[in-house]
Image (cartoon, rainbow, N blue to C red; front, side, top):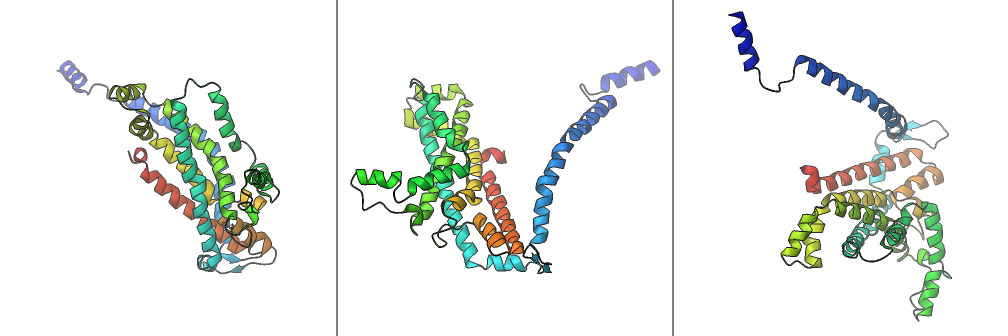
Length: 314
């Protein structure tokens, strides 16, 4: 009877069911994995989380950075939200997003379509490196170089004069109407290389059978791009959009070096407004409030971008 019960229990046990020993071993492995993550969490907490929380705390005070602070609660936030200068700065950031994100992504998609059908061209890798080069050059160097290009006696105006367009020449970074687009074009030049590298990496992950099927159906280069390449690049487009939009929203170094928010306030952005309030106006609490508001806007925008991507929802 005992032998029959043992046999029945062994037969009735589900095949492949984890034993208590296996569960204990799996739990031990998970705990060990979390232990390996502790150094990363410590670094994140010290260098990211603590400064962010400390910035939130400072934003609740009226403080000039030297004298004793005065508690104002959310007063800095309400005054910042109602400040027309800050609203103008965020409007400028929205314009820069077009130059930092929309134009680079469209141009990078165009270059990706060309490069995927130009495999026979020589030195194609050289052009990829050249296009990506602005990503590895310091932003201060880029801004200084483009400031010289945009100068009244710079390369751009000289080139316009050579082709008979002297009437178009102007001090680009000193013009109230053209200063912001001029800075935006610098952002386009920087970000297009990042987008192109992401898209070329994404194309390499698309199954070749899809291209073969499209060609068998008689699809040309343009139809093949919209039917196969573009749908296959959705995850990379979402990543590129996230990185470039964030770069446009938190832009500071280009503005600081090239225009310092001028002429007037025509190129002021939230990042520069944080610096201006903290170091020029000695309003450290207000500057922290603007920085926290910018962080919230970036989190909202990136969350919306990730929700748009079908791959993220899946």
